[in-house]
Amino acid sequence: MARQQGLLVSTFGANVSEIVPGLRSLPHDHLILVVETTADESAATAFLDRLGVRYEALTVDPQDLAAAAMRIVQRVQGQCWKGWSVCFDITGGRKLLSDTAMLAALAIGAEVCCYETKACRFPLLAARGVEEALPREIADALLRTKWPFPLATVQELDGRHPLAILMRRMREMDLIEPTVAGKAPALALTGRGRACLDWLQRMEGISRSWE
Image (cartoon, rainbow, N blue to C red; front, side, top):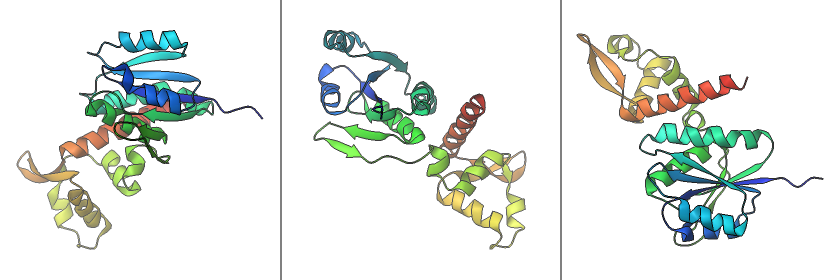
């Protein structure tokens, strides 16, 4: 039986020492080095060249967290569909870069490791990004509802109505908030709600492109 090939995705900031523990500890056939657009990865690439590691550098802008995570997902998914195992090492770089990689790992269901203070390995995240992190009915409501949503429509319902319950849950999760649309009270997406919707829409676009 053929051995399963492995892909290692490592974040990198400035110091080569950030990626060494992951390279030593995590079996891999190919490395994707994730760096910020403003970073200089020359020290890391020179180190990898000396070791003869098969790698490529992927630049992202973590200031746009969702877009940066999606860029990583798009690059990694090809190996996932070929049956490769994927592991993320989020030790290197700023916390924002690590958060970006963590979100990408969640999207594809990959193991995450960190060697910042001591070796930590997080179990496989059997998820499909935000769409699975959110309850299905919440994700569907974010995608299918036209926002802002008239508050009067909700107020006319019995408190036990599924839509009324759904909107209360979304408020408790800080996904929606009261606002005024035109001159009428409405429910609009919060910053968190907009970020979740943006991720869901991007994931739908990727899924359609591979059908």
